[in-house]
Image 1: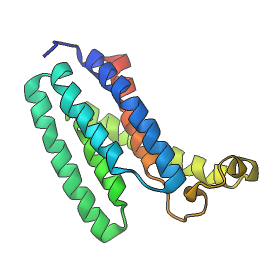
Image 2 (image 1 turned 90 degrees about the vertical axis):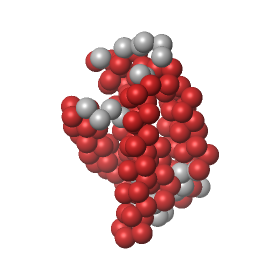
Image 3 (image 1 turned 60 degrees about the vertical axis):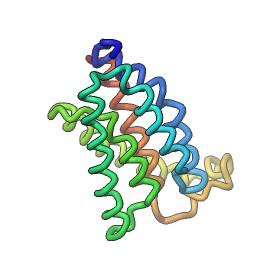
Image 4 (image 1 turned 45 degrees about the vertical axis):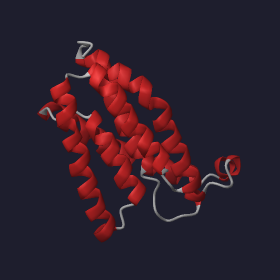
Length: 167
């Protein structure tokens, strides 16, 4: 609607989602929960900002990403102990990603990198008593499962940052 370049559109979306991504990281570390309000906020950003920064036909088609990822996430939740909050956040983030083949490859690379980095960093940090003492009430320090919101939010944020810088 505003006729922005893909890079400028990604920058506007990046600015809008940054506080939500930070919030998701914090709540997933502290409570091992991704709140429905953060998922709703992410969807609201795409619903409200998206039509202004993306071509309307592209914005409309990207809602299909939400539906497909939500369906896959719920199946994974039922059969593979994938967190419901993780599934909902991934679905809410899906419309922010372009379906261009190079963008899909970038998203897969970023997700793999953030999964490895977030898991490794979290496990190392929780093994250091001084770090754990800074946030002694974080549930993620004692649970055997992993706060996947770190990797999901990091992937979304890095994708938008890279697209805004390159495009």
